[in-house]
Length: 125
Image (cartoon, rainbow, N blue to C red):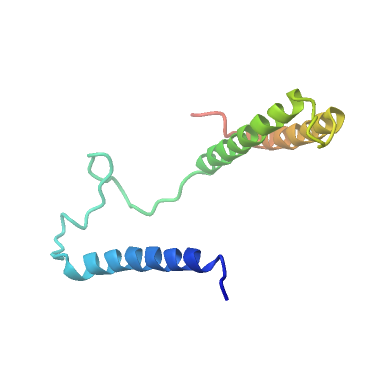
């Protein structure tokens, strides 16, 4: 019954109890005196204009998609380059397979880039 997971589960339980305990204690013990000024949305020191629940343009979502696409590309390119330039000598796939795999990956990214380009995410008016 000597499981290697028991210390991890105990640590996870203590961390969860501490987190929820602190949130609960701050909610119960802190003073709560709402006023109209405190309940007003605050944005960069400027008074809010209009409704706080306005819809965002699709352009913002496209920029977010571009960020995710190129962030994932960077994360995958660094280890790929390290393995490719070492020649795949650690018993892994050869350099030809790695090159073909990365070409397919870059084509998928290019399709995503062309999609957001055609949708107008790169043009700010």
